[in-house]
Image 1 (cartoon, one colour):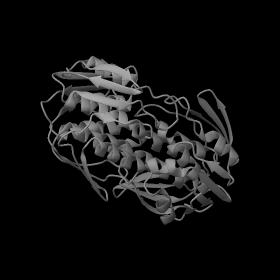
Image 2 (cartoon, rainbow, N blue to C red):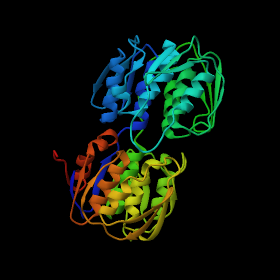
Image 3 (cartoon, rainbow, N blue to C red):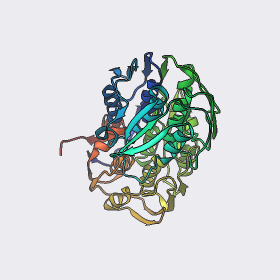
Length: 414
């Protein structure tokens, strides 16, 4: 990606469907043998990967624009192979529906973004509590269950994919399952609402205690995927860093309270307007401190973007990362652009210098890539970002959307 920085971003950006909701909804479609119709499906590499995974399992997937129809009439195989799971950790989510419906699942140990350990033992402990027998064979997790039975699962950490996986498994289990210390993220709520629309019985969504009454079967449904709150937050920060004025269409403010609060503190004006959010900055960027936390706290997926913004602030900021232990890989690249950042343990201390200068940099993971694009937009001179394939996993047509609001950005073959 080649960016000539210094352009103010002015105009409207349509926020796409949420990647982290679309992936589990595609997989939750395995819970029924009837067709499921999804709308507002984002055009992302991770969606292509999950589509490929479902096709390998013998499931029909028809996609056209932002619509997808998934029909898991029969399950051809209960295996999720390494070549797909290694590129996308969310593949582990097939375990819940497969165990619930086919009574067996064989899934490769996962890969995905290299941002720290994301232990799946919480998923496996939960499946065992529901009555599954788990073995590890040749790098694959093999789970079997004659019948899953409802139980109480107390999660040591509020894991998003763990909560979703166990909720899907429990939807068809015998009896009632209670998940304590469940994740409260909007994407988790989305999966629960989707199951309910298919005839399931999930209550307590949005709280840290979920109650799932198992039902004998689920039916097909039609569902519109929520907008992507991380994409929205990224463009909110872009408006601030370029002292621009953006209208983000389709954004749901209730999913972004912690981000909006911090950006207000940083000097931005953000307010609701005709089914979206107006985001602008007219004064200086003020330094703010932030600590990432599970929802409703400040999202770890917006930490890198906010750090890029703090490089332009007046004064000292401290960003503490409490969710993933290896999520400061963008620091070295931002320093190449003139940032003054010191990492001490789980915290980064940023001395804002009010400016950044273009440089050749390399993307290391999805959100780090986004932070470098934002830094490039605000920097003086040219920024070249290599390995931008990470971006395509989570941002739909990013350079097109940015170009349409005034950015000087283009994608070239290396």
